[in-house]
Image (tube, rainbow, N blue to C red; front, side, top):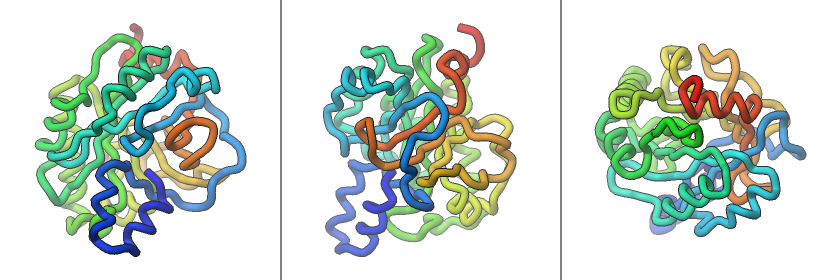
Length: 248
């Protein structure tokens, strides 16, 4: 989830594209904010960060983390166990995310792969619903060669299957620009799926249609914590409610 890396990869030789499988590639608009926005501080990481010093991140104020688990149906984060369990062990509320490749297989197929490789959910008060990272294609066409209608169907297939497997609606990570371009700015997911918006600016800006507010905001690619910098739009108690899907 890093715009600079994505842009560079698009401009380099195809051999460099293989590096992206270890990075959740981002698509932020604007420039990094100079200070963290209001909200509960957190982070997201992938194999790009390797073994994370979770105690240091906790001591610096991070209270939640999203960890990349899978991409498509052939990639798993080799550092997933250290990152997912390590964040939990220091006291963070944590969740897993899946980097979508909608041109490779169906949404349901990728949801199953995600759940089977770390993206499940348990009502322990410390596990967030899994997140679908749906954004700019680092390997080719921005919308993966799908029409807006086909992209909407793909996302529905993923989130419906994730719900069938876990009883939770997946968080959706995206940018307003990509969502508008590739889904036609649909509002059909706003009533169920929490929004994780990516925008590197001092303002969160216009949100995708239907979402009156965001749940998570990825506001910078680097800062106090390893990986990308995020905030939860609320208190720690409210984040526990999301983790528990209601009272724990």
